[in-house]
Image 1 (spheres, rainbow, N blue to C red):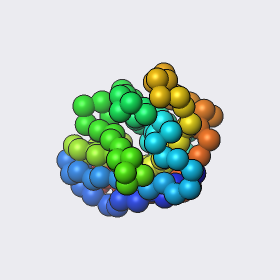
Image 2: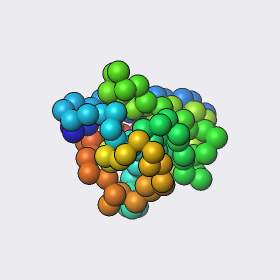
Image 3: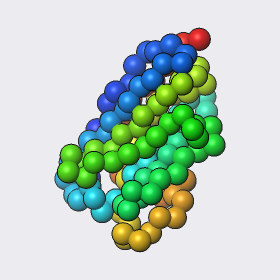
Length: 126
């Protein structure tokens, strides 16, 4: 599975952005999909996950502000980011992990993912 992330940019605090990650090759619908982010000088951090059955979870730092969704027909996973803060500034990466349909455990470690997109940069100014 090849992943291509897009949608990043420079915004002001309080603004919204929607990131998209389009998959090619493989079978998108057979994967749990997630977003991670990496701020300058920091380790890569889990942001949100959506399972094959559409159940989702998100990290504490974005809960209530970010929403992950997927469209299997378009082979795309989205990250809707609202009420952006300067601390959300990072490169955002999408990732895919093949799972069985019923498996919706928390896959919050980057080592659990097989496939990665190239990243899209989000900068939030104060």
